Image (cartoon, rainbow, N blue to C red; front, top):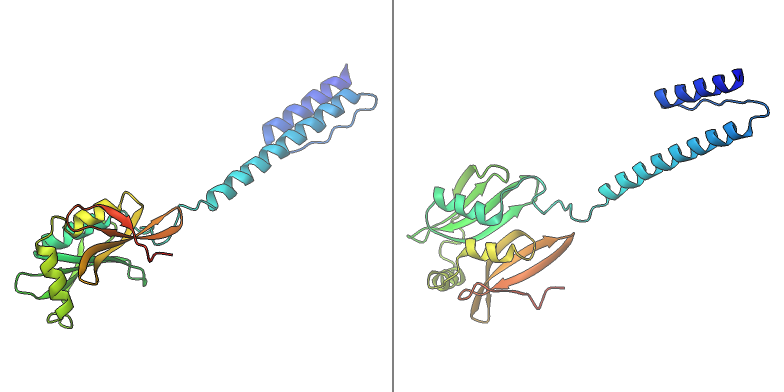
Length: 210
């Protein structure tokens, strides 16, 4: 009777402290077997916790370029840039060189281009700088003319591509005279490229995309 009382006390101490207490009682095999089973169950629970932590660490949806440093989408960045610098947005790129900002290129009504930087977590305008290198670029003027007559602008193209994944870049592409929006997306760690029609706004995967 006294031996059973000691074993019960040791078992209660083990459960209260979370530790392991070894109890040896001569001639009491049932108590020893019960203790071994409790230790085994505790070890299995610890192993399950470790496995769960590993699964979270290996989540493929966590991609650095997929707006890991903020929550502002490409469409929201374009809208913020146009509010600050009115004109026609022709591209938006999530800068991954360490600056952590959206860079939106806006062409004003007089043909001048501005690079507007947007914070990826607040839509705050970090700065706007005129880009003098491309103001008189013939290809850019042709693309801009096509966009002005289009039914889909850069923001709408970004929204269309967002159905395919997280948009990290939107721009224009002139393929043998056929101008279309292009968009880069990331989904479950996979990068894809899309073309978005200027008239219908329908995204189709780029045939040149590997």
